[in-house]
Length: 386
Image (cartoon, rainbow, N blue to C red):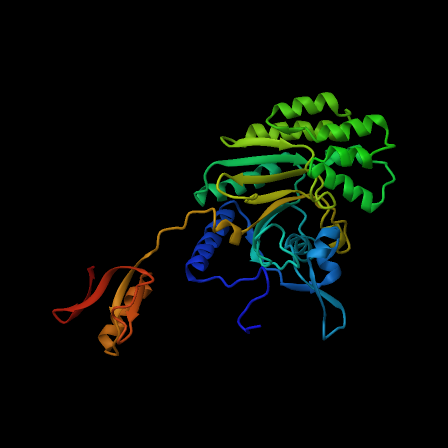
């Protein structure tokens, strides 16, 4: 095999795409900062138990593992940044009030999480710790929508769900981890026959409710149907009321519901959402509420912190987000004359991009949008339009 061939689902990012990704990264992080989110930069490598605490089997299978040559302990290359941010909130910052954090960095997956996906996503996210109310849920949703709209993504749709609905129906049942996973998978894939087989022997009320969830997806009328066919447990009633409230406050965006969508059930504790765009094959953003995720990282005090957030893959966005126009640049001749070098330095100090044409390359394709040129006129270096 050639030395330059990369592993499957791993790829170089070439100049035009890299520029697009970097411009998006700056735009989205600046938008988060405008909401008051503080940037953190967790390490790519951590002790395995820290990376996987409270995240469930799915993340374990997605995590590359290795042995630390210094300590002999198992290490992991992060497959998701959220547990690291929870650790930072709980153990390093250790604040009592609300904390807003954002991040952007690569994660590594042992398997692609969808067809044609990279195993090295560039994950960007934002999270609120310390507030259990709907206000935080709405803020995190609004920030995600603002980032999409600022990136000029059109025809958005927000899909809402709540992990408490399925959790309430399964509460108290003595189920193995394998059976529980199979039930959630059958719900997510809307496989009624498999679900009926898995729930055979359940209380008929619970079985009927679980089977009813398969068809509870669509517009706001789904919530009315759910109120009629699902048991009126406090958790389900609260979840339906909060979904209705959030939908009414999102704004001029299409909203749908999928009450059987329980992906990440071992992770999420309440609201779950995904945001789709018409020209994207998969969700552009996924997020939700994961209260208590930082508890295991607490230091001397209880850190059962409420938390809500979202994440996205910037590499995935490139195919769905319009590229920004190239910044105008100035073409300049190469030379070692002090006045020419000083003129170029002044322009760059003013924020201009100045591309020096090296000798013998004057006719090559210009990779920048050079709409001006630096020329000498009357003994002075001046910028003229091309």
